[in-house]
Length: 101
Image (cartoon, rainbow, N blue to C red; front, side, top):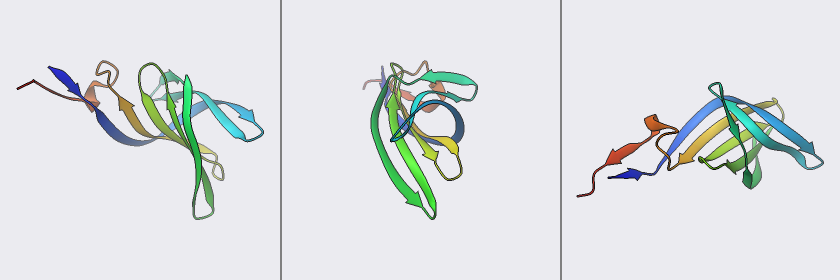
């Protein structure tokens, strides 16, 4: 039996602890559904625009999974966009498990 890797779109609001540097916010930890997630690595950062809003996208990870989060710098809010993980114990509702044939 093995786990099928799943990417799940979330789009939920989150709270983020940041370190603010000259180039902008650097996320250190986020809280999603009352659970804290440490950020061990920032894998990618890029900026996009939606109308007049500037959105900063972060691909972050820790030992349990990887996440896409974003910050709307005009409206001052954070969201979790996607979850990637291969550990079914962390997010069992996101996984499909199937038997080897």
